[in-house]
Image (cartoon, rainbow, N blue to C red; front, side):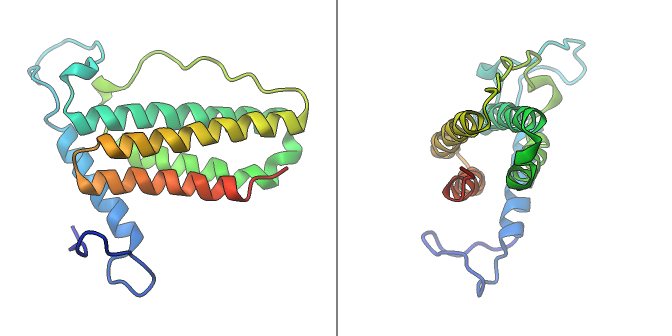
Length: 177
């Protein structure tokens, strides 16, 4: 993993630490934490999802973040399906959520992934109402990622979650009307 600058140092274009290095390092760290997240024997045939109480703290945080990002990505997909005219405006948002999901999926062991599907997202018939509802959902995701970043025990993982929240905030700043 790349050496990180001292706490409080901003990582910019001139920095030797690339943003991708930070993300890859945090994802790798989360995957390492995930590998020993349960007190269950690896030989156990118990295929039921591991309860959150039995997960390492950062794995529990990653599990929650993954579930929320997956639900929001489904909301974006539903909105795109119902309002194809929004495709140009929402395509980058869908790609961003997919990338965040792919980053977190390795940090969440298969046995800890939720088996229940999230409640279906109902897309309003009117395009403007659909975009407003989706913007509200995106804002909740941003807020949730911020709270989860505060709960993360690993500094790298906290920065990764905060980065995801910031990316969501940037998308909200240029939200289509």
